[in-house]
Length: 284
Image 1 (tube, one colour):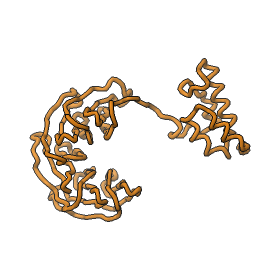
Image 2 (cartoon, one colour; image 1 turned 135 degrees about the horizontal axis):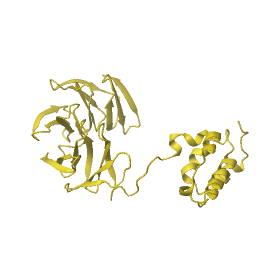
Image 3 (cartoon, one colour; image 1 turned 30 degrees about the vertical axis):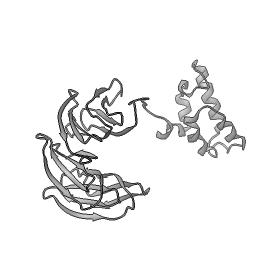
Image 4 (cartoon, helix red, strand yellow; image 1 turned 90 degrees about the horizontal axis):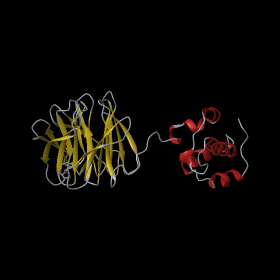
């Protein structure tokens, strides 16, 4: 273990143009020689002909990873980054379980389909007239659904990058949408506090699950297909029995909107995330 650095360490590191690594290195100032590390990072860039003051030119030698393991932590490096992936904010992303495709939805009114390995040359899917709120990929990996502020749900064949079906859901009748475990249905939360169930093949709304609560902002199917959970803007969480459509549980625990939720792989637990800064895990 190298002795802790002297007080000038922070000033030295703050003077570096390396904003990406600075915050990761400084917490370890008492365990590693930050001055030495920063100097060697600059030197390694110079040795390979790069600009020592441009972190993008740094090529970190394997030897440095061995002597400074902090560099290996996931937070220290972005594996892949796509700048200007859309023309506006990206509100939703989904990664297929099969086919290795990534689908993104943006406020720029478009959906894009990316290769999961390279994230380059995306296919552009157009048609929505307003921002895309959510996207999800079916378990088969061939279909995707997008919901939009234009009150439409669109089902896409992402293996051919074509539109399969447009569903006029009605004003705020399809917010966050998700495929069922078998890919035959799509559940979407509504401003009225309900969850609408749509059949993929026909595009028809076959069922409405009523919470008698507030705006449903998140929806998730359990992997076993038995449960469906949804989270509302007031923090309430509802669990439905999928085969019967009956409300099983209303779960307390959040005081603000539940933005996201997901079941554990064995369908026994539910984890929720809320604007109240809390994550809760429930035994379903």
